[in-house]
Image (tube, rainbow, N blue to C red; front, side, top):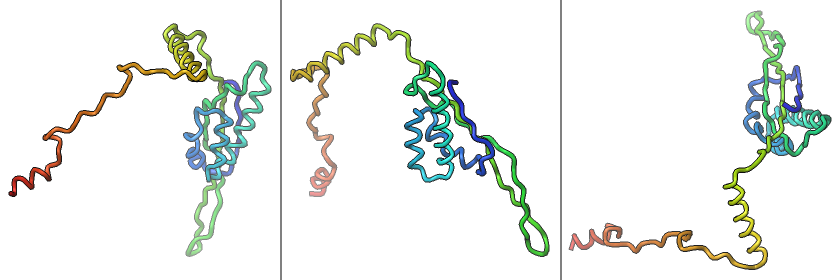
Amino acid sequence: MIATAKLKYVRMSPRKFRLIIPLVKGKHPENAIAILASVKKNASKYAIDLLTSAIANAKRKQGVDAANLYISKMVADNGPMLKRFRAASMGRASMIHKHTCHLTVELDEVKQPVSAPKEDKAKAKASHAKDAAKAKGHEHHEHKSEKAPSKKPKTKEHRSTESGKKHNKE
């Protein structure tokens, strides 16, 4: 966990906020803000504020690159419930529950592999050579084994049954 941001006593049901969590979890915070800006949910406004705060908290720490951050945890917990009464029929009163929630976001840094295996380096080198050849104007010819298999001509068995029906009727 690199940075956290908390927003408490939000006048919204945690159930409503939990609808947007799968949209952004595991993504880069800047991309998540762009996604949430297009979502037509009231919860997205709170999530955008929370993410911008978490990004600012991460930037204050030394040695943290903001480009390598991702949303590792996003939680909406229950807060205290406000209880109100509304007049009901026959002189009675009915209870109204106004839900609140506590929101938490944790950002973490993407771990870079220390050293890549030799096989991956060989593949990367080969693909780099192909890209360099294309950039120079040389075309890369494919081997026969890399080409797609040719289609076989249709035999009598593969022909439609309608022509067979016509012959049977005659």
